[in-house]
Image 1: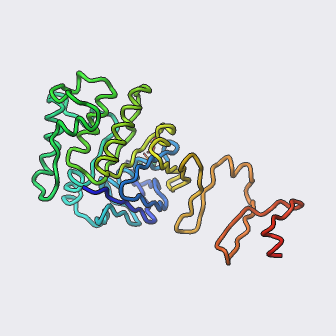
Image 2: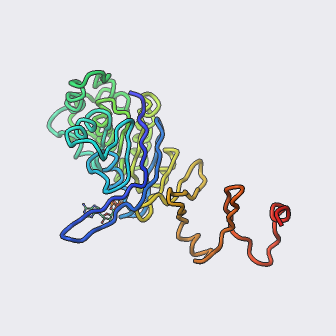
Image 3: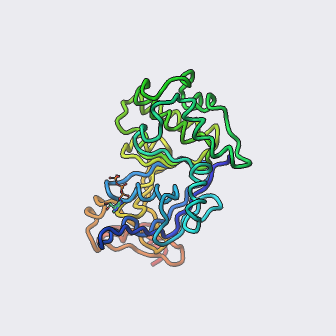
Length: 287
Ligand SMILES: Nc1ncnc2c1ncn2[C@@H]1O[C@H](COP(=O)(O)OP(=O)(O)OP(=O)(O)O)[C@@H](O)[C@H]1O
């Protein structure tokens, strides 16, 4: 299946527990293109898991819109969401054990995950051995999860996640508790899935180095898209309501109340020069 795009538009999510409300997401605007690999990073409690659960259709947003491919997640029934998760959207939960049945072989784990998709017409299924090869577990089809290293188990969890050839693969903390070699193997497996199957991949991670290896790094801060990293550079992101978050250290450096010059003709914004600072050529032209 072709990679699925995912679009979040002004997404809000509120949890209600015992009469109190927690605003977990407060206006997420994010477009993930078909075939992209994206890391979601950010401080604990910033809303990453909430966002991935919404993309997986495990919950519906309190407000705003989430589309995955042609599906509007907020408008689907529970049964439709459940079907989507077993087929077009693959989900790998945090902790490989939660994705694997311990008492059957890897081959059987992948095969069982394919059963539901097999009943849905038009989905191309690969042989479980081929899927295990893709994530670097060649020859381990007969092994049970308990015999594997932590890194191999995580890749087996990925194999189960892609068993039904999803267009979007969502992975929560794929490298937690892995050593450097295990992390490199998981990265290679994700890259193989992305390039050979064109699967769109979104991974939540606390591991910033791993995240930057995926290419596009989206920082979630206080329930919103706080920043983006691409090719080693950091970018601030304009939200649909016109706000831009800056990293806390930049806010501290500039000081609250710092002014930005808005050029309405050029649709540009830049930091107002300090008084006494030489204006640049542009400023002279304009004055
Ligand atoms: N089921 C829930 N009920 C109530 N509040 C919740 C629930 N799940 C998350 N929250 C709250 O929503 C906010 C966002 O949590 P979330 O788990 O999405 O953040 P996170 O960035 O994934 O954090 P972590 O990196 O620690 O996993 C936090 O304030 C959290 O306490």
